[in-house]
Length: 193
Image 1 (cartoon, helix red, strand yellow):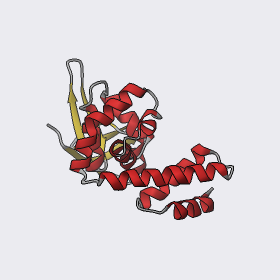
Image 2 (image 1 turned 90 degrees about the vertical axis):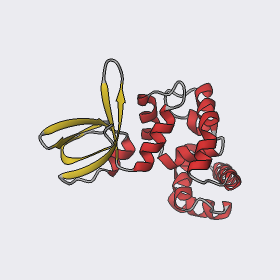
Image 3 (image 1 turned 180 degrees about the vertical axis):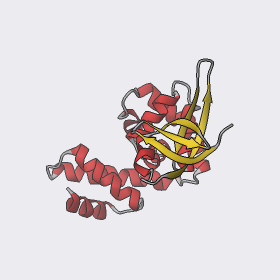
Image 4 (image 1 turned 30 degrees about the vertical axis):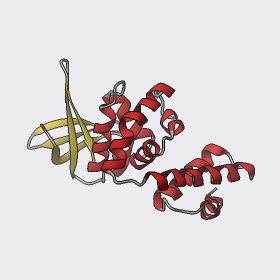
């Protein structure tokens, strides 16, 4: 099993990178999250997941170990293949996926292209206990934060802001400080909208 690759960055694209490791060029499929974190320097190290199928051996690369762990959890769900998991990690930050699963937020999971209601529910049912246990997330605080998020979004919508734009701003605020009060979320969002 190839668990990491360290070498010279030959080519960097939004969906893949080529890393020269002692004269051998490895093609690694990456998410947009990883793409945004890859530094523009000659040498890099990526954590990898090797998928072996009858017709292909495919390497997936991740800058962060935590993203690789989320990827592995996602592909363990029936109906979620490696390309769907990569799309999920390209659409949402890994922390957003963890929080959505932990707080039963089907809407967030379903907002990802190619994920329907049944698949979103299956992801939550299959992974909620693992996410809560592995990342030691307190279920009550996650639900409370989600309620705070919903209240803040409703208030911003009432004030005339576009819900999708407001949601992006609120998500950024909650990533920085997940236990933020509704009032502070709204105040910070108003500065950034």
